[in-house]
Image 1 (spheres, one colour):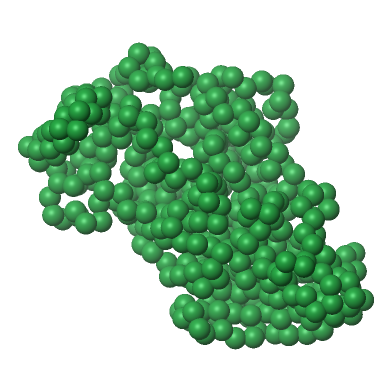
Image 2 (cartoon, rainbow, N blue to C red):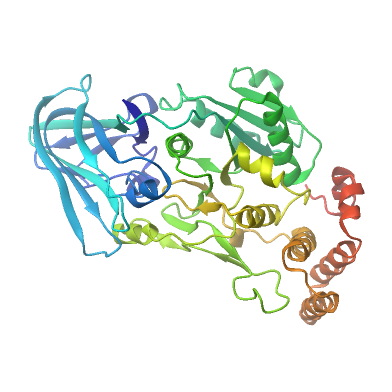
Length: 466
């Protein structure tokens, strides 16, 4: 038996619909050490949800898995129904149905095996349990298989942080309290660009604090990758932002994906809106989708799977259609050691566009970037931030990335920047205009400028804000 994925329960009411569907009479215990759902006779709980669906079509396309089964922790009498839905919202089928009596948490109920459809008609699988006894209960469970993994996976998790102590504390607690991750081979590298974290809080064997200069996100992630590569034991890497709210099962599912992988691929985790937790803001994106092969056009980032309400179970079937991504955000982005050896490390962009440029190199290498549902983190969407000085890095690095991958004409870049500067001046936004002018001037200095400049000194002198 090998655990492929966990069936997790919500930690709080504000995200409950992303884990389970049940009527209001059901009682949910959110406590970490005794998380469960209490049901009365006739009440039904369903995992027809974002986090607990099994997205069959992605697994059969990218892994060798051909069958799974559920191991459900139940107490009481239940009818269990396994269902499959497809791209067509109205089409669904019953995969299996059975009744179980006198269930006990100590003896998980096995449902299956469930044979996975190995063709384009594969869909999304979930289960429903209906309580048949006066009282019943459901605890966090698992999806397993008897297939032998095709490879061993060890994961290095690199988190770059700058003075986000509380976020880091919460993220690490979430990772190290996850029972499914306890037996997995991983290590977390926290790259502390602000040098404000206390080394005495980082004594776990699977945890390493890396004090670093303020080299920005790209420099911090790169330092984390270098530290992990030097240990020479990790098959895969995961980059995560510091200011996220994490569902640790997303990390656990990476192991199942890569252990049974048919081919090498990167995973682009989705961004769930931290202000509206049920909304998927994006899961991967396109770069200049409307300008390719039509001259100069930097600055166009098009989020995919944009603003999907995950409370609507019909919306979940929209995720079954895989989009062809150009890149994924570094808030949750995973890839193999082989890929790093092939395309090398992220460019020293400090912040902004580093994930875009890295993703473009992955695409050019012939590897897929997969928006694998339900791997995602909660994060503030880009639209919630409006910091003027960030425009400098965005514009400078966007021009550099475009030059690397599309070879624009110099005068096209001049026209593009001039237009934006004039628009900014017309709106009396002098600071924005200044940022664009400085960004263009430094872009024209070429790669030697970025290679020679000390990022911490440069940022503190020009754009540092408390």
